[in-house]
Length: 64
View 1 (cartoon, rainbow, N blue to C red):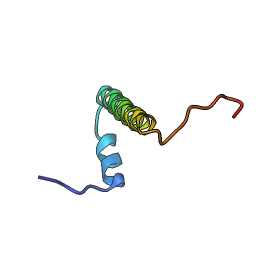
View 2 (view 1 turned 45 degrees about the horizontal axis):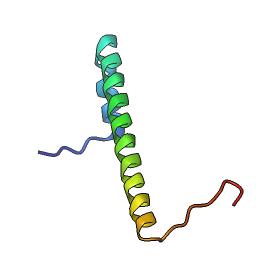
View 3 (view 1 turned 120 degrees about the horizontal axis):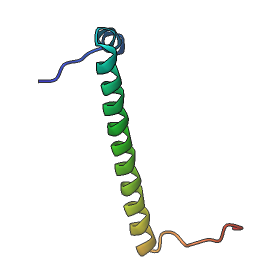
């Protein structure tokens, strides 16, 4: 079941949490964002490797 909740509603709900619950929420969100970014980096690396193997890209020096 998917529920559409506005950003403001989320903020209002967060205000109702205790300070400890808010701190835990921050940690959970931070961990999830870190995981998402890590997956994106891995996906980008795999795509770059595929392009390199297909000779779509050529390695360059920093000066180039």
